[in-house]
Image 1 (spheres, rainbow, N blue to C red):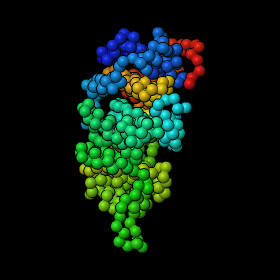
Image 2: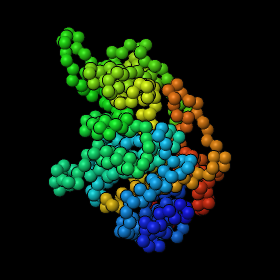
Image 3: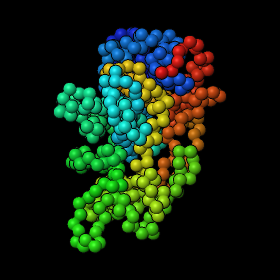
Image 4: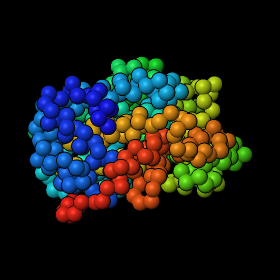
Length: 419
């Protein structure tokens, strides 16, 4: 940890800040027995002090964006774990429910993990993956219009697609190569973002809602054409669907069916944008088990099954973010919250880059490659600890024994209740 943090010491002007950096990262990486608030981190990490950690997060003069840029550059230069052109750039949002209105970023807004509107904080994030490892790249807080003086007209307001484009440009400026941008329907149905991607000649796989409408010329009112992806999929004959046997995150068989769709003059295999459908049951096409993706990858670059495989990479590192305490911040200002998020991403990157050489690393079970070229590992699994007890918050590919001495320490008493 000390050697790793040494690459960032020049970003902090005082010894107390450099010490707090190490204490904070160690606390985030410890097993998740309690919420990783400042109070709990100070109680669990030897030598840590709550007031000093709070000052480090809230008031100390350091730039979280500079920390993130240095972290990405450190990963990019890694000879074995650095990025390559076959990876993809995932754009996603993370919403966490919060009580009260003291946190400046809280408002009544859609929280994805809840599937409904609630009071909470939302961030737009980017990360890189090739299916074997995930590396967080950037984060932008979403500022709700209701919390800004001029609402949506306020200069500080930016839509989620605008924040996503900022993160895409950030990754390109940092020299991170990627094959395509992958995102859900919040971004897939934004014409401005799609236009920017096309203008920049960036390949993408973007989700569409089943009822995403398209304009059509109705030549025969008695036989109208399909207007939505769901209608186009329903009219497809069953023999047009390709059956895939994939592997889910628990190593069990996962059956999916994929197909190439045509929808008016907008989507088709010979047009500029293709429309791919994937479902668990092509006869029923239930909403909760059917997905639609728009892509400008040509059929030569990726068939329908490969497009779906790329899209499935989207959510795999979220459980690890939770283990590292992404939503456990105990501060109210935007700057302090963003600093906490950057430190979580730094802890994530430490656990990846601290892996020993392949011949020394703990063997990880491999999965059979599916018919769609499904990835051969389950990236969201956590590395198992070598001894019995709580598991380390370490993503796949990192050594299970990185923090073994700390895990074996007895839990301090009097840490207070988790909040």
